[in-house]
Length: 400
Image 1 (cartoon, rainbow, N blue to C red):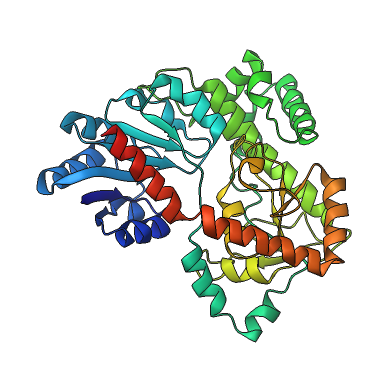
Image 2: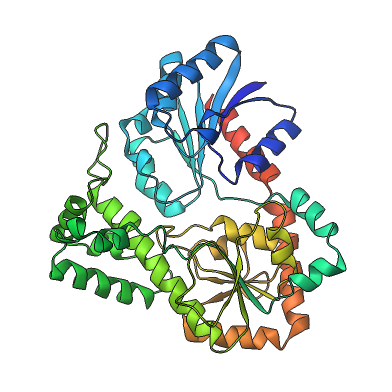
């Protein structure tokens, strides 16, 4: 079997590429978007067409959805397979989503429930996974110096979203901020504070007045206005790309600031941490070579899921458990489908609950290590990329 893997440098791509080739599949890669982020849809379509004409491909594959690839594959009656690993993904609103030759896999069940009715039998739910074999190789290579260097009481790896908050950029640009009334600013601030008090359910999307949506959309000249869409995307984007990202920033900074008053907190990030003087900024961490060591050696790893991921499990959960690390995560509705809370991992309801559980597990080493081992064993047995991609290929075989 030959396939084309259209890459754009997602952190998932090396693991998936390795597993697909391990299955005996001949995988060709198109990598122009890994170096050129200004590739146009026409250029993408032209390049994919060249691959299709030159090779007997079984399908074209990508991480996340590319409308140009979908339209091209639909023209040639060739399956286009993609696995969405992010949320939100504005491109999913393209009319290309409805193409007959799509085979779209979504990791968030709420995201799946939203989009599946637009193309039944062509959109599927598939959670993320971990490349346990690769993670084990890194961990087995750890030295005593590594264990000492990464022996943190409380560790968080990830962005604070301060540099990614489009809403903040609007407020800082006078020409954009002029479009945001005091009503909208107050409403957004209140909505964020209210959402932070609720775990396991995202109500921002349904709570936005049209006035707020219109002001945000008009304030940003770069607000996504897809011409080829099947639905009005303004509410979705305002809720997730603007307010959702701002919420992630406020929530993460608030939680980490509170934790730093009680514990030694190591934060691996490229974000500005000037507003968090109590934490130790360790700088960024290499995904492939350093993160597994951080997750394995740290006593307590945190996962704070950004709210646009409504019910699904982020890649961080799978990676920490796949490294044999102990994890405390915010509650997500899909966690009980795959893990036993208190046995495979731990969850928190609010900041006070998180502080109490961190204190407990820092003083109960045996219990903490038992949970870490259970979580690793479950991921290694049921939730590897080999398992997920085998399931994907089985579905493709049925649908083709």
